[in-house]
Length: 539
Picture 1 (tube, rainbow, N blue to C red):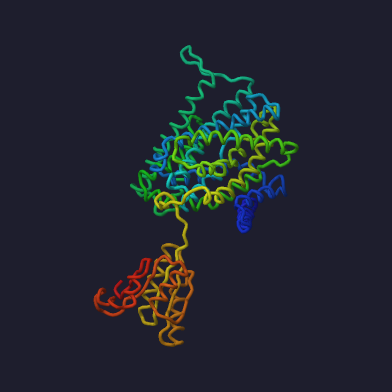
Picture 2: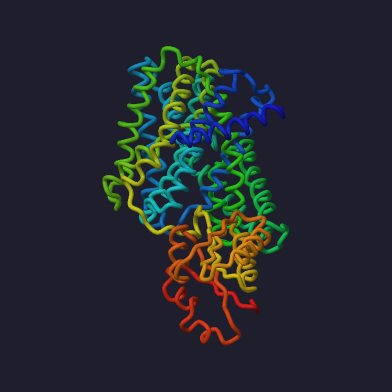
């Protein structure tokens, strides 16, 4: 198993990087790596790893759903009214019915088997949609109207609905019928029980998410049982995974919805803790996504596609364009979404992957007629929609959505921090470099050391470069030495290197307001659009 895990991580990582350099989504490379390493390719993965694939995928999906919850914005969801709720039911329902009707026409299925296929195909992939929506939020696309938040919430709710109906249909077809529930002489059929199951799954999922968020705030923030962000993430991930495992053992609530709700309530209860956990789960997702998509590729059974490709593509097209398209329209009727924003739902809300890999083979395993065709279409939906969705979301978002202001309290904003340290050859240079190094270490940033030459003194410049190498030894940096007007050169260099902050030194022993009057520091302070930190001998 150890060799297999090494292959998954290394081959998956570099395959994703190669795909990225070819302007394709990283998950395409990872899925292809899984196909090559798995039973359909070179068969290099051990049976132990393949046997544990479902559990490993569950962990990865838990991580991404916690990230989704930690990125939701309550104000934006409230602003959208019922749009998010409708997105959770109407598109999935319409697509499942459209796929069922297409399967009756093209595959000669009965309606029940066709609807079983519709539930598999209609489920959305959190592994594709969640990271894509969080990235849109970090860039500001659609955030003014809460479009990414509505899609994230709707995706979670739709999977709850479809998985419930799928379980009901699977039991019905596998047993030749389905038993109901008798209470006090009243017998309810499984279809009559379905609304109660949906309410139970969603209601208890939200309630348990609320309870877990309260527990995490108590343990991690108020009682201080942990000492750093890594331990915070470890405890939160373990308890969230416990919810998912408990939901599988006692299927009266949605474990995945509970995890997502936990992240959402954490923002409300303790925003600083939510920010720390967001960073920790960002780190976990770096590893989890490789495992998820490589094992997803390894689970795809290419041999079952056979002659089903053409029919399968037609069924997918009917389900997405007609069924889901109708659901998207009904979901956004009466909203403030423009037609381009509604059209964005086509690439933004159609990707299939994890759910199809998890349940696509179950009908065949239970001997249900049409199981091979169902498995083939499930595999085809992954191969087509996952890479297409991962590519289309970032491609069409700038064309169809409006860009708004990013809220850093709800989502991690990825930015490379560059600090400009403007120094001369006086002893003050060591203080400026020390402060710049401190700022860079806190933000994992880089430092640009600028010395504007006024008097040609090669030895002094050499000493300055040596000092920079010593004080910035553990920080990526570069030293720039050039002539010119000092203040203008500092500002020009800051603009050229897109720095976040400028650090300069105070000269002399007079009060700061007197020293800066007419000085280079005063010019930089009054003209720079960036923050300027002035360091003196006592700072």
